[in-house]
Amino acid sequence: EEFPDTPVQLSRHAVAGICRRASLPTSGAPPVGLSPRTVRYIHTILHAALRDALRWNRVVRNVADAATPPPVSAATAAPATTWTAAELKSFLDYVAENRNLPAWIFLATAACRRGEALGLHWRDVDLDAGLATLRWQVTSVRHQIVVKERTKTGRGHVIRLDSPTVAMLRSWKARQAEERLFLGPAYEDNDYVFCRGDGRPHHPDRFSREFERNQRYYNRDHPDAPLPIIKLHGLRHTWATLALLAGIDIKIVSDRLDHSSTQVTQEIYTHVTPPMQSDAAEKVADAIFGPQR
Image (cartoon, rainbow, N blue to C red; front, side, top):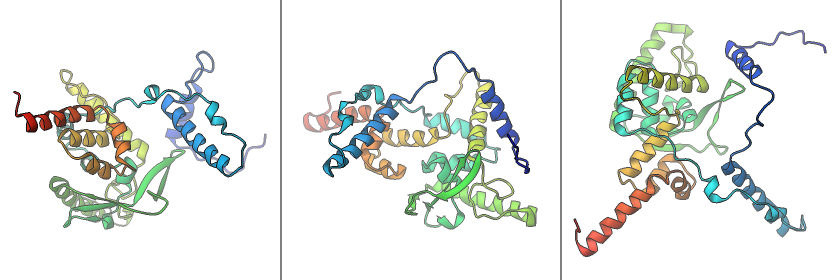
């Protein structure tokens, strides 16, 4: 084969990834397929599409009827690993000197997705009103940073910020202004709220690895009380879990998470809602029959 005249530019991270994949065994156990949850989801979509095709006389029958998707019990997502409020505060106190602390606090209190936080612009933040509008997201495609609108319609998701988060953002904005002044022309002012020291956007994958790395550092320094290791997305799950346990209405939690319906929220946080239902049942019974304890 002929090789191109222009050399291919590979980062050290890409080379490391190629080496890791090359070291994987090529024989032995078969690769793990799709999860039961994904298979059931695909079956649902295909069944609905073929049902429409049948109604439009494009097909003679819905062949998906003959398929046997995984049962609902097998397709139920495992409970998300989360932190307690005390564990979250302990971690945030531990990383108090880390430059990524403001972003981690925002993720923990805004309950947004990683890409939405990294794509947040200062022009979409109203600190006086305590509001932030999530319009953009920073993602990674083949290890390259991609910035795009969070939805095809360009609709922003407005969230209300708590007072401590607003105070943190005011302080963070002042620090960014100092960094911009220090670097001068070398600073790339892209208006990102959370970015690298020179103004460029964070690489999402590296940003997540930094979060997980600091958890390992924490557990190394606290061997008697280690934290459960969570993904960066676990901060979003932690907020939702704490909110539901605090008695916040599931509709409000669902709106905050920007879920399409409360049913989605209910399915994800089944580990939280049964105790809530039990507590509600006891409260109503107490109202009817009087306190039994």
